[in-house]
Length: 557
Image (tube, rainbow, N blue to C red; front, side):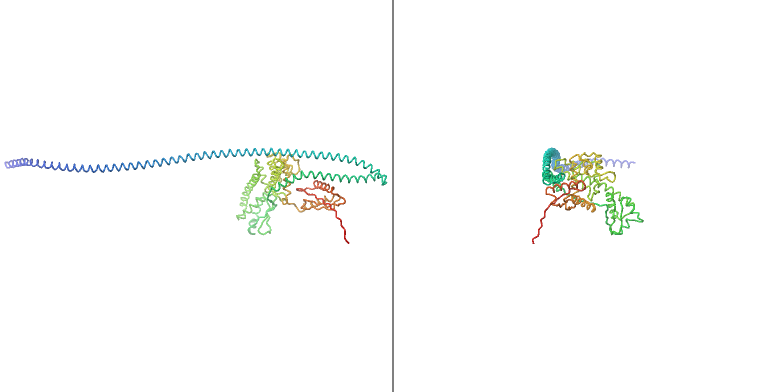
């Protein structure tokens, strides 16, 4: 126990001594440590300061770089903003300039419209002035004709007075001649009277022939010269094509085998084709060709086009035939309207009823004496307008009258009556002017003319029909007309022989010189022309030429 206590005491004493010694050493160590710590702290502080300086310099450098970058970005943004502002300004400027251009265009368009309206008003004023001038000319022309008529009336009255004087003189001469004949010739009164009347009749006929020739020459110098000038000017200004169709159309085939395909099994294809088109399809021995026969030119044209398409396609059976024919019918109906509109546009005619257009277009497939009727009415319209312009009438109205004068031919086979009367009723139904209606009704003399424009249309119709090559007539009718003209001329006394030449447009008459004098020859030509007008129907005009010549023959021996 004691040993334990001594040990504990020793330990405690050791610990106390160690504590004292350790405390001193610890104090010294502490001081050393503190000095080291201070020194280290100073070093670390110096390092921290250095690092802080370095970091401050780096931050300053970074700040400067950041400022530079910010300045650079600012400059770029400023430059970009300026560019965008400039672009926006340019766009705005372009927009404003475009708006100004648009406004200028609108102003220019308004100016053009105003200019066109002014030109239209000027043209209309000019047209009205021209029409007024034409009306004045027409009035002057009518006044001139009235003055000429008055002069002719005065001339006729003077001639009647001269004739009366001649009759009085003739009575006196007859009395004197009767006395002389009774005294000298020892003739009875009846015989002397007969001889005297014969001589006086010859003398009067000679005097009348001379006066007739003089009056006729005076009238022809004014009327015929002007008429020829108008007609010549009109005809020369018109150039037209001649189109002729017949009642049959020939369709070419690629080979003869196609005929069998057109006929079909037991003839079903040809029956279906004829039933759908209303034509007769003639398939004979003609190589590589078939003939379509029909009096209706519209149906014939539909059949021709449909057959050509079927042959080109190669599929020929009843269902296909009906399909193609129906399609072609629609195309032809549109073609009819297009043809009418084309003619109306060429002539400058508007305000035409749609049904009237259809009828006008159908004339493209109608012919008269081999002359295409649509071409004929267009030609007549041009001629009528030119004639109206020459004499101061309404040109547009004359054109319209000429264009529709044969409109009745489009429905002649559907409605009973002459095409002139039918046409006038159609035109009246669709509200055409009275002059146009009268031109259609009167152009064949079935009613009287009521307007100058309808007379122009009738004259133009005669010109178009009489132009050589415009129409064809049968040989039999031609020969009969020639024989009729020659027989009429030879029926007059004193005529030796008559010859119809130039396809019946001129008759040359040879007369006996001892029976017909020069003065009587002119009177004879007038009488023959009157008789031909009464008994013969002919297009245009016929020239009558009377030839009187004396031949003296002798022989040298």
